[in-house]
Length: 376
Ligand SMILES: Cc1cc2nc3c(=O)[nH]c(=O)nc-3n(C[C@H](O)[C@H](O)[C@H](O)COP(=O)(O)O)c2cc1C
Image: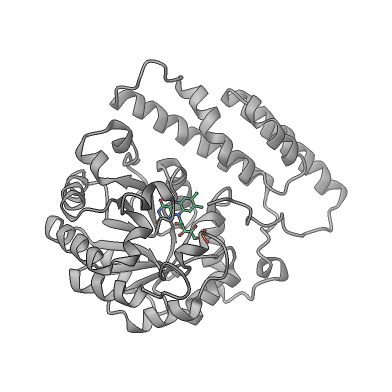
C-alpha cells in the first residue's frame, strides 16, 4: 500500500503512515455517536447514514437530523440517495453549505426495495448513463470532492462496474467506493476481489474497496490482492469500533494474522475497554438526542432523551457484549431496559460474569466469536 495515497490529498487526511480504513455508511447505525467512536479508534474517514435528496429539499426535519455532526468528529462524508440529477444536485449544494462535510457521496448500491422502487440505490447500477447525468449535475453544483459507492452489477451474469466507472470518471467524480458484490447477493456471499482488482487497475480515480472485511487477514488480503487505496468496513465495526486501530497497527507491524484473526473471531478484549467505550457511546447518544431536541421541533409524543437512548442503544448493546458470558442473558432482556441506569446495570452484570469466567480459565486466550450474524 503506497502511502500517502491520492485519498489523503482528496479528503485532506493527515498521513499517519497507516493504511486507510474507513467506516462505511450504514442506514440506522452510522450516526454522529458511532462515527465519533470509530474515528477515535482509527477510522480515517466516516460516512453518514443515507440521506434522501428530496427530503432535504423539502426541509424535512427527520431527514436533516441525519446530517447532524459533532464538532470533533471530522472528517465525515455526506452520503446521499435519490434518482434525479436536478434534485440530487440541489440537495448536494445545500449539504455543502452546511460546511460540515469533506465530500459528498452518491449511493448507487442499496438493494432495499423501498429505495430501488424509486429508481435510487442499486436501481442506478443498471443505468450508467443516468449515473453519469446525476454525477455531472452534482459536479456542477458543488466544489467538494464527489464520490460514488456502488456494486459490481445487478447479478453475476451482468458485470456493470466498468461502465459505471467510465460514467463516474467522465462526469467528474473524484473517487469510487466499491462493494465487491452484486446486487443479487445482498450483503452475503463471496466478495469478488479479482473484479475489484481489475477496477482498480483500470481506474484513473482512487478506489475504495469494501465487503467482507472482518479482520487484519481480510483487510491485508484486500489491499494486497486488489491494490485499492483504502478499505471500508461496515458490519464488523458494529460493537467493535477497535477494529480500525487493531487492523492498522497489525498491518503497519506486518503482523501475520493469528489463527483467531484469520477465522474472523474477535480478540479477547479488555473488559475495562468495553465498559469505557459503552459509556462513551451512550454519553454521545444522549448528547445527540439532546441536540436534536434543541434544534428541531419534535412531535409531542416523542419520549425524552434518556428513554430514547434505551430504545436506540439496544442494537449496539448486544453487539458490544457479543461472545461474553452473560451476553445472551442481556440479549434476552433488551426490551426491558428502559433507562441508562438499567443498561449500566445489565452491562455490569455481564462483565462481572465474564470476569469470573476469565479468572477461572486464565490460560484461555481464544477470541469472542464472530460478528457475521448481522442482517442487511
Ligand atoms: C445495516 C446496514 C445498513 C447499510 N446501509 C447502507 C447505506 O445506507 N448506504 C450504502 O451505500 N451501503 C449501506 N450498507 C452496506 C455497507 O455500507 C457495506 O457496503 C456492506 O455491508 C458490505 O460491507 P461489510 O461486509 O464490511 O459489512 C449497509 C449495510 C448494513 C449492514
